[in-house]
Structures are given as C-alpha cells and as structure tokens.
Length: 460
Image 1: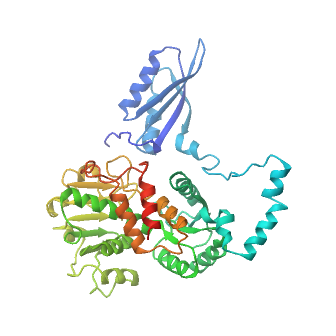
Image 2: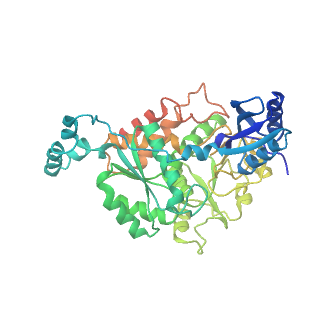
Image 3: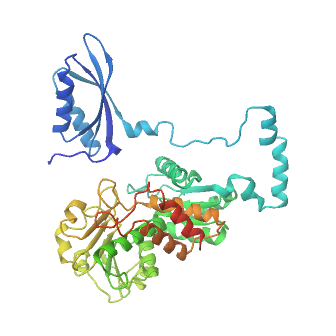
C-alpha cells in the first residue's frame, strides 16, 4: 500500500506523550510522524520533571486510518509512551456547535418586565391584531429551519436523524457566520413524505424560510414541491439548488478560461439524483444547449421506455440526439464533465478522448469521481468539492447569501431568475485579473461574495 500523506485538518489529532527528559526524543517523534506521511502542526511541553516530559503533539493525517498509523509510528520511538490520543474534530463537536443567546439584557426587574411578562403580552396582542408584525417583532424575519430526515447525510447514506444532527448544526453555524442568519437544525424521525410536509407546515410560523437538507431523491422533489405550494415562505433544497448555483458559477468561469460558450459546449453530467437534476435544469435555464445525463445504467434517453418517472422527465429535456452507452462512450468528444455521483467512476485516461481543453468537475465528496491531481494532467480546468485542491465548488458560497437576500426581500419563494442571478454574482466576484485555470471560484471567506449573492437575490 502506498504511503499516505496528510492533506486536511479534518483528521487532525493531538497525542499526549510521556517521554524521557532527553530533548532529542521530541525531534525523533517529529521525524517519525513525517516519515509516516503526517504533518506536525504543534508541539507543546505540558509538564516537565526530572524524570519525564509530558508532550502534546498535534498533527494532521490523510484519514482516520492514517491517523492510527501515525499513532503507531510514534509508539515505536524508544523512550516514548503514547498516553492519550484526542481527535480534534470530535473535540470541536463536544456539547454541540451552536447555542441560543439573548439579544437583550436581562439584568434587572425592569428588563424582565419588558422582555417577558407583563410587557411581552402587549407585543403578542399587537401581532394577533396585525400578523404582518410577526416579521418585525420576532425572530421570524431572520430565522431559517434546516430540515432533514437523515436519509442522505453528506455522501454517507441513510444514517437517520440523530447522525444528521452534527451536520445540521454545522449548517446552522455557517448560516450565522456568513449570512448573519439564525438557523435551527430540525432532524425529523420520519421518512414519510406526508409526515415531513405536515411537520414543516406546523412549525413554519416560527421561520422566515426553510432549507431542506440531506433528503434522498426522489422523495426530496415531492417534499419541496408540496411545501412550496403550501407555505408563504421560501423553501430551498440546498442539495439541489445550492449545488446547481455554485456549479453554474464555476462553469461560467471555467468556460471563460478555455474561451468556450455555454450554448455551444457539450456537457456530460454523471448523476441523476437531486443534485444532478437541479444542475441540469439550471444549466438549461442559463442557455446550455447540449447536455447528456448518465446514471449507473448509462445515458438517459427519452426513447428508453424503461426509465423511472423522474429520469424520464430529465431525459425529455436532455440528450436530444438520443446518445446511448456508458460514461466512457458518451464522454468522448464532450467539452465538460460534471460528476455528482460516486467515487472513481471516471478513469483519467478517458479525459483525452474529450474535446480539446476539457473541463472536469469531480464533485462526489469526500472521494471524487476521479483524482483531481490525475485529472489535471489531461484537463484544462479541474474542480472538486474538496478543500485540499484548487477550485473547490462549495455550497457555502451560495446558501447564506441566498437566504439573506430572501429574508431581506420578504420573498415568498425562490425563482429560477434568482438562482441565475446568484450564480452570475458568484462568478463575477472573481475578476478578469484573478481568473485562471487554478482559480475559478472565490473563497467562502471573500468579503464580497455573500453580499453579492444577497443583492442578486433581493434584486429579483
């Protein structure tokens, strides 16, 4: 097995070591970690006596298996005992990642009488008399429900509502950090469409918007459609539409790099689930003229009577030449590959069969359809969903600004025009001077990106 190399802090560990007082031992520990492919990020002496040092060594690994290998490597250094190992990602999650805090002081009896009884009663009566005051006098005007049934958690599958909670907490934290929006994780212990729809209806009075998250296809399509019909607040399935927005933004800039036009390129999309469907529909709305969708069985074609309903609808608006065959077959001659499917389905040697200056977006996470480094040997522009390669395509670029704009505009729904505007706003945060094959997307920490998206949304 090839030696693994540290890449990201998501597999960062801190080892508490008991060592002999010989200062050279610490250097041997650092060498052992480096030799095993790890990256030392901090070494701290926690305690020192004449007989023993207690040393905390923090290092990054490639994955959980690699982290265990680093621990074993350190344990072989003479004079070193690995006393305790802490996974820094798990430590960060202890007690959860979000909390509720009061915006008003509650220090005196006077404070209490206004924030709660008896003063709050007057506010309640005012809202009952004029329900429009609900947005102005409560949290509703800046609140989003992050709703999941746990059926499609990240790329990990049907893990259920409890396992989905740390992901939804993270989503809520991102809403606050990048959109100044209060968001609550709502993890439902049901995967019944009727129950999910009715539950969200019942809690809707508290929220100014609903973000559906990690709900498996095709159930997610029906849930979103029914909630949009029944609620007077915007409903946005981020796995569909957030992904579509950032992919369109990235493709806009990738095509700027290779000097091609959206209406003339041929695009192959691998994956016909929630994300793939939304990407295709937004690309078509933006003017894409030649799109072929491929699933595990091959290209979707309208003349294939065996397709299930959702795939049949998708085939009806794509693959106008009725191409058939597997991914390798339909990829030949294509200008763009967009993968939202499964790991390692695209062999690097297929990329040279594409049109000159091909664009490859391998977005399966955490393991993409093709290794980005290998794809970069053949493609003009490569992007992935990972943070450890150039050109990360990340939904965080979209959804905080999307909801900020929706809430500010008191919008009742999300339109295709809004999403097209958001994609264009993200793309053009990258200036002509900055744009190149390794920089087609702004960082999520760019000071303008979320404001630009919010402005684009509220302006429609």
